Image 1 (tube, each protein chain N blue to C red):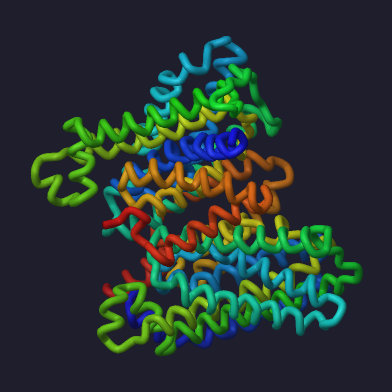
Image 2: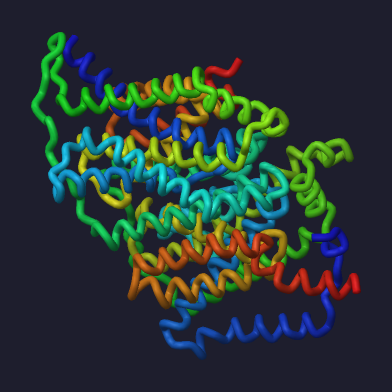
Length: 289
Length: 313
């Protein structure tokens, strides 16, 4: 019993991180059709900033979490201003935005990842943080893992609540439903787009900061998360934050149990298998009405 | 791109220039030293990949990242048939295998557009790669194969040259055919093309498979350059990315654009990558962003714009 609980928990913990990363990407893609392939790189930046704060300044990573979010939010604003606003302004339609933003994001990916190699080197880095284990119901969990899961879930739920209950969230949802309609009722794209893009990047940074508490980090850690995030978005449906949360947790569970029954080297194969099945059977996402 | 652009006849000067170029390329193995020959080989490989990619994806606006998968499948055909097949046969079979794979996959995924198609095709490369790794581990115990006797550099070069030239020739021929117009029609407005009587499904599958043939053949031809073949080397996503970048930076709606861009990129790669691996990719990234933002039609728009201006004035 304890073993299955541990397996499920490890799936949910990875799934929680997937959900946060995917929600960030979903905000960017769902709202602006920005296909940000470099999303995972900002996760890596968040992880390294947290590692820096922990090893150089001895700051508690949890205390540093909001700082990471803020720093990446500002970075996101800057990236949007420099790279994506010109595309949004000149492109004729959404398809053009998608294709061009994909290319620009490839460029960003090269830049950010290799800057990280130059600054931080290619070695694996890490620090220990709350690694004692806790026993619940006969199963043992690392305290840091439980904490990471808690924070990932909290971040996801906070975003869901913000989208549902605040005026800003309402504006975002309106913009997703109908960009023209939203502009007609006075929602300002010039404010909303950069802010939402920044929020998406901030979420990636938060996920990276959380990951750094559990795993070792390297400049190439971000890429697999980008791909996973794309899979989760597909599972959950474009523009659906709730779908992202459910999809992320589900994918985490599928991976954990799938790897247990087959072999750990099949992890990516399993995610792609799920991805392809969903796209073929339910191309609008598992939870589409 | 105006419709008349598709049916333009090349002038005599262009034909003469082309013939000289091909001749110069063909004698290269006896003129160039080893380093320059390998540089030329890289140029030719990316030229073939980018042109064949643009033939389908540039025309239809289906952003395919499957090049790495096709390339890897071709390379694996060479690796598997190395002892029983001759080199040209395995190159041809590599192309056919990639083509067949593209056709089967195309049936399933070519109804998806935009980012979904891009991500799914990217996933294909990874999927095939992980699947091959898994099968090799399970049944032969080792991952990868060693090629003992490889053909001479000149043979490899000439084979890649032939495949690349074939890719360009087929691409030019397709563009002025009904088939090519149907592909371009799908890119402009798929529903309209359907209404006008184009069997979009068949045309898309055909185009996808045709463009995969060249990627597979190039993979099979280039495989002998690595003496050791393993999945991470031949299903390298960088090959796929680079192909897409070259085609789009050059101008995916043209033939000449990707050709020019493949030379520029290969030179940049060879000159900078070894000395400054990280800086090189940062420069590449910056260049890419600047080009997309300020020259969205690709390098080709430098001369097509000029020509369009002349015609109007």
